[in-house]
Structure formats: structure tokens, C-alpha cells
Length: 422
Image (cartoon, rainbow, N blue to C red; front, side):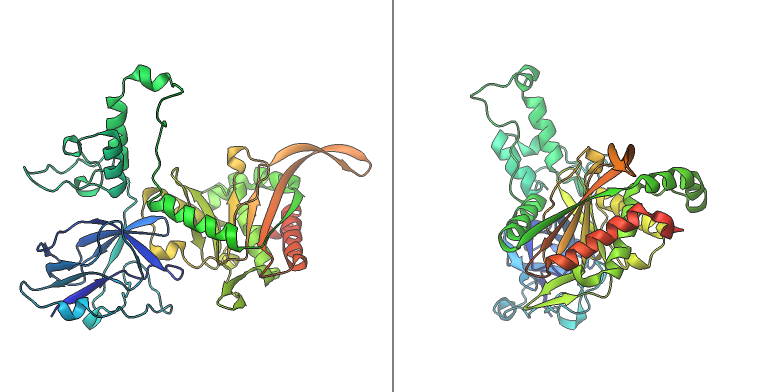
């Protein structure tokens, strides 16, 4: 019996997926649990595995096509099997309930409970030897790398891929481009020269482009600023750092302390912990804290579930685990799903203050700057204090200024008097 291979639901907010690369051609045999196609969603590439063994009878969506969740990508069955009925059936609408992790996703319309599996493709393969290609074998190359090679006149058959299974990725083409251009040309730009780099609006860049544009167009943004005197927080970390490292096996960072304060403030001032849900504003009981992680080519927001219930040690460990897996390309879809509020920290880059863009459908995001020593007037005198600028951006359609201000004041108070941590 033929089986549909549909775009799987990889998170509560996922609506579409883009076909990046077919790993099998029509007529190829496929094994249950083995990758068939690579799709892009939520800034991460995923391998979708075959739910059953058989033959890839029909590819219904070409590379580069964006499809809604539940849409037909391909049909797997036995050679000669009639699949016309499946190709003519509209996909069932995806369920928003019971979304599971990437090892147990249930794609809409898969008969017999067959489950296509997905795994993250953002894996660092730079040290893995490339699989040799036989004469005439199809070149495995990502769409971004293929386009970059075409733009620069690179023969992809001469490249050695460092991606999974010898797949050619963007970095392989960039190395070939760098080797092709004489070093003197790379060092001396001219007014008539081409751009130093062309970044296609595809993959992660396209997701960021679309979502940030949507947020900017739709949200009624208001920004509130507050300067927090974190002198006591700095003293606490300096005094307790060595003890924490002995007890926890890690030394919590200032970001960890800030995340802990934000999670507690969300619990005590929950009105901002809300999201747009159709035609209603739903205040969430759970505190799922989104934390922005820089991947070099873009940002992803990993999600610490039930952050308000975690201790400092548990929260710090969860953050490191998620950030490490994000940079290694081992995130599951659930690791980026269902955040109720996000923190973006650019202090490590020396930024003092900024206004981040809200990640819809959330109602707000907190920007955290660099801790700086500044002269501050206190008790009639000038004192040098460790100061931190906080910028809260919120959607005025979803909540008013007063509850947003109360939340920001709570975060400021918790950071200025950190005795509550112990």
C-alpha cells in the first residue's frame, strides 16, 4: 500500500517548510528510518526520514518549493503501484495538539500511523572525510551552495563535500571561490568590483527576513528603558563564583543570573507572559523563556521550558546544553518551540543598549546590554556603580504600558537586590 510523505509538524508555530534537497530520486529504493529529503523551517534544516520501506514512486514537490504543514512531498510504495488517488487527495489539516519531539512527529495524512522521522542538519561535518563519488553519480549539494557555485563559475564536480554523506555545503564553495581569486584581488577592492559576498535570501536568512519583516509591520511596538544598578549582583557573582563552580560543576554567568531574574519576574508579573491566539490574548501560566543564541549566520531562540521553576544551577546547565546543541546543529524542533517571552543579550559584543524585535506571536522581548561602571549620584555623593541598561520592547496591541512597566520594574528590582537568589 502506497504511503504519503508529508511536510511534518515540527513545532507549535510551524506553518510551512521549504524543500531544500531530495536525497533520493524517483525510482530509488528507500529504507524505513533513512533520510529521504531535507527541509528548512524555523531557521534549521531537518532530514525527513522514510516512514516505510519501499520505492520513491513520485516526488510531488521540487527543491526550493515552500509548502504548508501536511502537504504532500512524495509517495512511497511498490514498483508499478497506482498512486493517482494519493496524488489527488488534499492533505489533512495539521493538528496543533500533541506536537511531539523530532523523534516522534506525526505527519498529517500518513496511513497506518506511519511516522516520518526528522533530525537536525546543522551538524559540523568539517572533520568528517567525504564519501567518494562514483563516475556519473549525482552530486550531493545544498541549494545555497549550488547557487553560490553558479554565481562564481565553480565546477561542483571538482569539489569535495564536507557535509553529511559527502554533501557539498556553502563553506566548501566559499573555499573554492577564495582559492580561485588571486590574493591581491581579495586585498585590493575597486569601485567597479563585485560585492565581496552575496548572501542568498534562502534557508535561515529567509526565515529571519520574513519573520522580522512580519513583526515590524504588524506589532505596535513600544520600548521602555531602565538602568539597573547591578553592583550587588556583580559582588555576589565574584563572591560565590568559585563555590558555585565547585557545587554545580559550572560557574553561572551574568546572563544566567539575568535569565533567573526574568523568569521570576514573569511569574510575579504574568500579564506580559502572553501571546496572540487568533482573536484573543492568551496569558500563559507556564514560563518558557526564549534565549537568543548567535550561530554566526543568524540567531535562533532556544527555549528553556518552565524556567521559573528551575534553580540557578539547573537553568545555567539547560542554557549551556541548548546553546551547545544549537551551535552543533543537534537541536530538536521542541527545543525552539513555544517560548512565551524572549531575552536577547548583546552585552558580550560591547553593546550598551538596543531595541530588539519582538518574536511573534509573543508580546515582548527584553534587550540586555553591557554591564558598565558609571558615576552615579547616590546619597548626595558621586559613586562608581556597575550599571546595566534594560530595554523592554512590547506589543501595545496585546497589553498596556502599565503592566509592561511593572514587569520591567520587577526585573530591575530583582537584579539590584539579588539576596533572593540565596
